Length: 173
Image 1 (cartoon, helix red, strand yellow):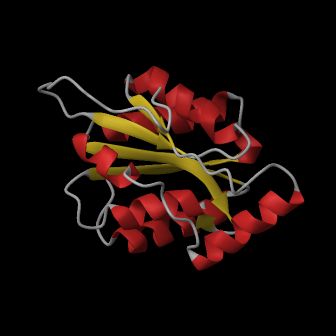
Image 2 (cartoon, rainbow, N blue to C red; image 1 turned 180 degrees about the vertical axis):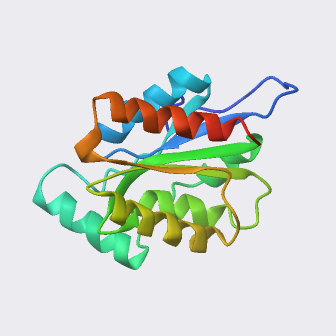
């Protein structure tokens, strides 16, 4: 796992270098990012967003930033991602949109050559599908893979099926 202030010095490899870019306000999406890390062997890069503390204030600020695209990535964060060939974004959906930090990453990668995949956690599948559509518009290009894990199916066999389907799609490219 790569913490926000760590440098990213990777050894050259022949296979694509991928990273799981994770934003998790409550730890929920981080748990799923660790599952993806276990399945894929990819490094997790955390997006730090102290402006969204737990509680009502942090939640309201998160919702407003999601609607207004109000989150700004830390200095140098987008540049740190340039050493990866494939970015797998993992995080929550807020009011039918990717969480503001994830949208900021997508917008920062518009002209970057990396492949992009999405794994969203959300209240229901419909809001997750809407978030994938918005994310695709933010990025302005096709995704390698996209999957939604509704809260209702977490922790069981259906969660495993969703994660398996997603990781299999990652290996197609």
